[in-house]
Length: 63
Picture 1 (tube, rainbow, N blue to C red):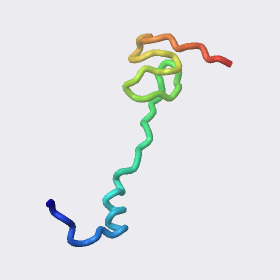
Picture 2: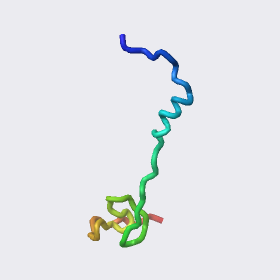
Picture 3: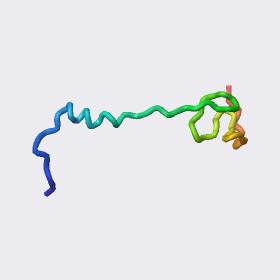
Picture 4: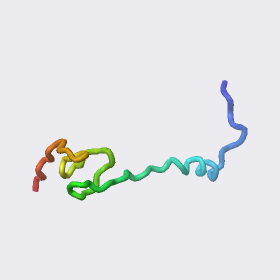
């Protein structure tokens, strides 16, 4: 049998412990080519460039 807590953890202490578990929003950067927001260290989904090179050609949007 393992160790058991002597006291019940209160809601306040439980909330203090979980205060750092929140989700963070992804940090977006502007693409130097098309000026659209993109994820850092990722190819731009709008123009398909990464570090000044054409990595892929984006598909045409269906209307």
